[in-house]
Length: 188
Image (cartoon, rainbow, N blue to C red; front, side, top):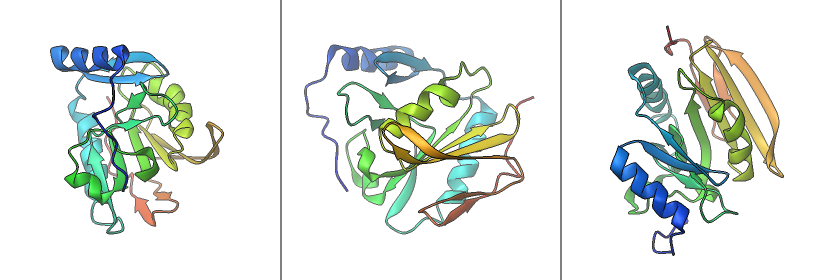
């Protein structure tokens, strides 16, 4: 496991993000150089993340673990970082004082589309996670009960995409795990 150092010089944008997060209680991310603030997830959103965590935790290989509200930086940009709803990375991150997981240690990120999503998760984050070379990005969309799994990142784009509906299991390549979607909540 590689640890990201929080000791490095923070840029003005990173300082602004941290100050905004502390002052507002909202979740801050810097995506492609843009400071984005997200409200605390609603009950159904948070419940889906918990359901996915509960499924992943006992089925992952021993060296991996799921984490909620952990951030991952983009390796080619000193400012950009994302905080997916769930990420799977090296289990050693559990004992780290760092807040950024090394992207090289992250195997899967999961985003649950918010009820009023402005296309951040469905458009912007696909390229962002591919650019960070995250092997798999699972997008859960409770608005229509669908999921999309993006895999094989190369040159800032995912080369493979599989889409399904709730009720169809999602197999995550490379992890040897299957996620059941039949019990996931949908937005009203």
